[in-house]
Every structure is written in structure tokens, then in C-alpha cells.
Image (cartoon, rainbow over all chains, first blue to last red; front, side, top):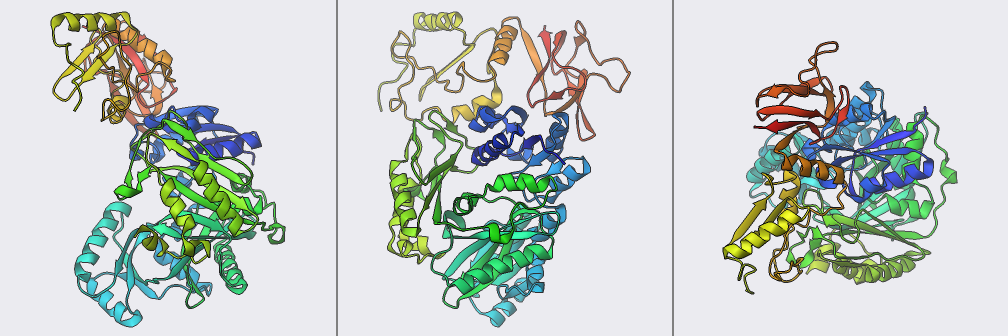
Amino acid sequence: MKISRIFIINRGEIAVRIIRTCKVMGIETILAVSEADKDSLPAKLADQIVLIGPPSPSKSYLNIPVIITAALAMKADAIHPGYGFLSEVPELAEACLANGLIYIGPKPHHIQKMGNKLVSRALAKECGIPVLPGSEKVSSYNEIVGIIDAIGLPVMLKAAAGGGGRGMKIITDKANIKTIFESASAEAKSAFGDGTMYVEKYIANARHIEVQVLGDRHGNVIHLGERDCSTQRRHQKLVEEATAPNISETLRENIRSAAVKLAKSISYENAGTVEFIVDQDEEAFYFLEMNTRIQVEHPVTEAITGVDLVQEQIHVATGEELRFTQSDIVFSGHAMECRINAESPEEGFRPDPGRITLWQMPQGPGVRVDTHCYHGYTVPVFYDSMIAKLIVHGNDRLHAINRMLAALDEFSVGGIKTTIPFLKQILKDEDFSNGRVSTRLLEKVLL
Amino acid sequence: MGKSIFEGITDVEHITALIQKLEESSFNFLKVEDQDFKIVIGKNGAIEINGAQNTYGEAFLNPNPGTTPAPQDHFGKVAVGLETQNKEQSLDSEHQEIKKASQENVVYVRAITAGLFYAQPEPGADPYVKVGDVVEPDTTIGLIEIMKVFSAISAGVSGEITEILVEDGQLVEYNQPLISVQVK
């Protein structure tokens, strides 16, 4: 199966990312744009663009029938969904298969299974992978009381159809459970189309460690190391690094093996990430969820392995075997990524879209910036506020931190507010520099 | 609060001069807004060029006049608040078409969605319309198909078709002009 033309149905920095690798591979790129993105950087870089709808995502980037129609009319061989939008919607993968288009990602059943948190938990359990103590689906708040009695507080009430940090509420005491349950369920129904909730033990001093996996059609699955994404604000990642600092080699190897085992058990194809919660105090790890797409923070894995993950995604999609065995993957140095958002940290991280009047990106050894922004670009209101990813690679973690601080210092942005100053604070935090990261670290930095 | 940008502008002489400036330029639309005054001038019936774009473009018109100086004309006081309407946009040729259209009372019927355009009800049938036909607002001028779901596109105006801009079976983009109609 040859892929010579790819229809890219995403925007922003990931669209630029995919176009870049396609250019290297000699693959033609057609970009789907909404009206708000027709003059964007990826639109200028793509070989062709198709204006598929108005700015609203539901009428453009989420519009499967228009996307398939356009892909077929433009004679694309394949569709790359990027991350977000339709990348974890099985109907898109199915529509591709039904219409003779190659989907650059896993099979629909992989997306379906891992998209349901209860199903994926059950699959993890079957593989002997630890899962957080918790429940199956809860239909009433009374059940939650019973579960709390069994596993103890605090617990997290989660949407089975949720993910990516959304659809979750912490319960720290038994009062108000009824109200929390009813509102959470209604929100889940509205946001994900499914109000099914379940309960999981909440680990306060947690590490969020995830493993990059890559599988092919022939049953081969390898891992490309883990990433630590503990530094989060409201469950949204801000700083990610590879490899995870301050964990024992035994724990590291166990987490990596568990991820490969899970992916192999479902014959996973293409790139994916298995996420775990690590209880630092107990040296224990628990399966959280699996994302069946390329992730935002994939560049840190690319930095320490030298592998172009988008290239491998395309390669696997053609039906070829993986180009690497596990022993071919070698890790070198330490990498970090800061997500830079057009937000005002002093004003509760209020989004600050607008026209960029100054844009000076850092460069130099071990510095990479993935962005769709440039001097004179107007950040639109319709989409998320991430404007750039700043990735550094160093010989070790300290070197990476120093490079990151220097690069953040060099990164000058005018016309919009950004989270660059806040990120500098995080990098300078004593716990962060000592590798004592956790999902609670930002509560301290924000104080 | 600083001086109103309309200071000295409110007499007829100045407004006439503004209209003349617009007429001489290749812009079709001028909108000047202050806290208690607004002037909107369009050439030959043009009110908005690209509705969707203006809506989000206007959101970024500087809310603090005076912090980012806007282009000044020879009055020294008038600001043209149209940051999105710059001539380097990629739809430059469409801009030219629209300019031509608005000068002759011609409007475009546009695709309400991206998809495949069909000029006739079914293969082998006569096209819905041809150049010279007189249409009413509810006249069907073509179909757009998305995965076997067909939407009829209505003219939306009364008038005579002057141009058919797309071919049968062509992939059309969202908002792409399909036909032009000389309105009465």
C-alpha cells in the first residue's frame, strides 16, 4: 500500500508538524481548513487546502461527511487526524475504511475499546496490570457512598466516556455527593454524549507517567520510553519530560512492560500512549487510560530516541512492519517540553487571543519550537489557547532545565499574554529542579 | 478618555470628503466607530464583504484606541478599523470578483457547505439553471452532496443569472461563490 497524498484534518502546530514529515517523505499534503484557518501557517505550507466549513469545529474539523467527501474528491490516499478533534472518534476511522481511505491511526475497535474507561480498565485487569481501586458503572449516589466505605476517601468521580483530564470531579467528603453526582452525570452526557460515571481512588501525591507505544499490523509492539507529565494545572499538562525522573529502574521497567503488554493484548496498531498514575509513596503504579493517537508531548520522546513518530505512523499505516525492534530503541539524554498558551496567568489564566505583534523564538543546540504562530498572526478565538511547544534536549535533566530556562528567556512574544513567565517559575521551583514532581506541584507554585 | 476620533468630523463637508476618499480607494466598505458615534459607508450596496470573517475580525479591533495607532488619512483623525480587510489575503481574486460584483448590483450565491456540486437533479437531466435565466429566491440552482446526502441550494435573491462559476461534479469549498445573479 502506498501513501502519496495525505488529507490532514487538523490545525495549528500539529498540522504544521504532520506537513513537515510529509514533505520529508515526499508525500503530498492537502489540509482541511475552517474559514478561521485559511490563511494560517499550515495552510501556507500545505500543497493544497480545502475550506471545509466555518470556524465552528462541529461544522468543520468535526464534520465527518464533509471530510470524507473532500478527501475522496481530492483523491487523497490517507487521512491523518492529528490529536483532539476526530482523532479518538471511531466513526471517522470506520468511515475511512468504508470509503477506501487509509486511516493513519489504529483500527476502529482499538479506538472504541480504549475510548471507554470502564472497558479499558477491564482489559488492563485482564492483563494483570494494576488498576486504581474503584467501581464499575455507578447509577446512583448511594452506590458511591458504598464504594467510599470500601476504598476510602478521597475518590474521583469520572465519566466513562471522558478523558484527557475532562469529566472528573474529586470527592473529599460524603456531603453533597448527590449534587456532585447529578451535575457530573449531566455534564458528561452533554459533553461526551454519555452520562455513565464510575469511581476511582484519588491519589493525592501522584505522578502521571505515560508510555509511548508503537504497533504494526503484524503483531509487533514496542515502547519508546515513558514521559512524566505530572506538572498539570486543572488536569491539563503544562510541562512534560522524558524520561521520568526519580523512579527506580524496576518501577520504570515494570511500567514500560505493562504498557507493551496491554497494547499487544489488543493487537494495537500505530502510535498510542498508555497512561499510568504512580503512587510515589507506595512505589506502585496503576493503569489510568490509553490514548489511541499521537499526543501533544510526543516531541520529548522524539528527542531522546531520535525517532520521527509521525513518520512511523505513516509507515505503519501502509501495512509495513515496524522498522525497529525493542533493542533498536536507545535513549539518550533528557528532554523537556513546555506548552505555551495565550493566557494571562495573573488573571486566572484567562485566554488572551489577539494579534501577535512580536514573535521571537529561541533557537540553538537542543532547542526545538513546534508552533503555527508568527509575527502578525492573529490567534483565533475559536480554538484552544496553545500557541507553541518549546522542547529542549540536554545531556541530563539539569542540562535540560538550564536549556529550557535560557530558551524561555529568549522567547519574546508581544501583543498577547502568554504563560511563559509562569513556566519559568515552575522550572525554577526547588521541587521541580530536584525531580520531586507531582500532580500537586502547581498548587504550590500558584500560591 | 482621550479625544473622540470624531472630533471635527461631524459636519457634512467632512463626511462628503470621507465618501470621496472611499470612492477613490479600492476598498468597498468603511466603518468608523467611537463610543457614541458610528459611521458605516458601503460602495454600491456592499455592507459586509465577508460576513464570517468580519465577525471574528472585529473582535480584535483594538479595544483601547490610542494604544495601537490605526492608519490615519489626511484628516489626521479618522481611523479605518478593518484590520482583517487587508489586500494581501489569499482570496485576493475573490476580492476582485466581489468588487466587480458590488459595482454592478450583482450578488453571489455561495455554497452553504463544502461538498460536491451538481448542476442538475440527476445525471443526464437538464441543468437546474443556465446563464440568462431569471430566478426567484426559492429557485433551486444546484445541489451539494456530502456522503450521499443532498442539499438543494436556493438562489436567495430575484434576478438574472450572469455567470455560473462551478462545474458539475466539482468539489466546492464552504462559502465558495457558485453563480452570480444580477439583482433587480
